[in-house]
Image (cartoon, rainbow, N blue to C red; front, side, top):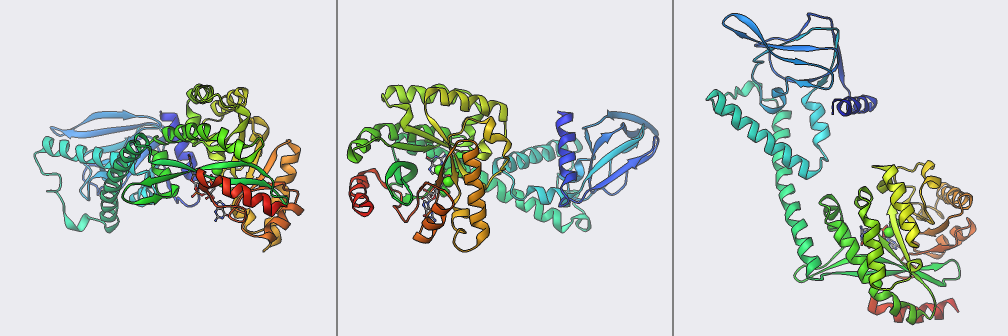
Length: 425
Ligand code: C2E
Ligand code: CA
Ligand code: CA
């Protein structure tokens, strides 16, 4: 744990954005004394710190701290006030100063559940302190000490608390909606370019809410991801896709694949391999007709585990596409480490191919990379013929986008297939 904390400090310091204060104290130096104004906390980086309080006129040691430990943290939890103990370096000691400003910067964009936990823990801390001292937690609230920033900070936490509760409610609603079969796949065609021969479809989830109408994924997928409900959602999509596959294939009159999006949270547990296998077995679906789309970020949390999981998924016989390529933690090193079949070029690059040359250069580079590693390429979000021309010129052989077809209910696929065959000539 201490090591983790020190690593975090290192990473904080390497970000110029988080201006930090670093202080070194010689043995015997007082870091703060009882009665000093209380305005920030410290983490010991190296060395040793002793915390003492005065009892009957003599100092009594209440804690001896080493690297990775925190002290003076009440400054972050209570407004204003003064130090109730003295902190002294007992060896040459370097401390990392946590100012409220630093916390303010970090707290913005905090996961709401973490925000909720923090605010609950702080509330509890304050209450137990109040019980101990017999003073109401806010009773010692000398207005002149209350920094405006701290007010904003506490207010922000209150908002976080509310949004965390809303999020937990939404997670429950999502679960209920899965059970009530309110989630349905829409499918978007993936075709060869420029010939527009149908290769397969990507399944994209839609929430058909009985009161709110159709809810797009950006309104619930992020919540589902943070609360882990997304695993159920993805597996449900895989089941639906397996049910529709034979029909789609028959309508098309040839083999095709369907892509299913898998959230990164599946890649922290090997269990996903068995579950995917069971679903395919149960529906007697040829694994070769299923492509699983994962994003780069799914692979960075626990790369070793992700390597294992991908390899075992490939052993089942499904293929793997790397979604939104170029937008995440693009590290070319994983392209050969991870078992990937296809790269999906993100729409942000496709959008730039005819407007500026740099976009096209990037797509060319990705195509070159794909060739080197023997991977397929699908360009996402194609909206016009100029883009098709530029992408084809760059060596990209397949694509999807509104130009060919928007995501549609499975029931509309037959009409789309007929129309597309006509356009393809
Ligand atoms: P994605 O996987 O990158 O999906 C492509 C998104 O681009 C889809 O948005 C699609 O409708 C949209 N799109 C396709 N062609 C065009 C185009 O020509 N122009 C523009 N502007 N957009 C286009 P959608 O359906 O709203 O899905 C958004 C995201 O939600 C997906 O991005 C994916 O990350 C997530 N998602 C969707 N379904 C699932 C699912 O079943 N499981 C998980 N884990 N995530 C899903
Ligand atoms: Ca996708
Ligand atoms: Ca994508």
